[in-house]
Image (cartoon, rainbow, N blue to C red):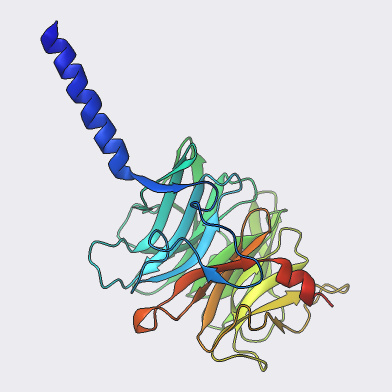
Length: 294
């Protein structure tokens, strides 16, 4: 009996040590960080935004229990690169893991959730192409990635940054043209797609109601290199001339890859002011959008 109690105690100790090792010292919807207001600040430093590593394309699940972002080119070999996933358990976040949704050695990046959170769309690159894939929620995990069998993926050799509106219309970037396209959702498929008519730009994040988009571009009015812009859908269905988000977001450095929190309260983007000109993820209150509305 004493041996059994000792064995059970050892198992409990090992189990507790294992859990503590893999649970981050961060809680709440935003890793315990106080939200920003009218000035952009770095997001989740040391957890998501790591020194001397590229991070970009942040996506938060609708119920705030999962985060995806992309990381690459780290000087620290212990740091994860590729598509990174962080899960939440109760109020705590579990240590980041490489997502590997396609379950192959292909590079994957820029995962974004469907409106109901039951699917993620992301880009997968082989030696010659970058195409849009998706995975389906299966309990606490995701299905093996599937190639999106749609005319979208035949539009160009390189496509990425697939974000979805509330009605599941899909917006993506044709990398070879650096143009934004829209594909209408129709009975579970994306058959028709069209270029939206914006100047040369990339990484478009569509608002849930499709009333506006956030894009990165080298517009005429800029603060340095790539900046984040806002464009509104007009009554005739066209898009307004891009409006620069201004110095609260844009700087002498490049700002790229905008996205938003599920509740629309915050904007996330990459800023290339880390060591060796790499990017960290920043965030700011979305009130800036209201101030710029015509």
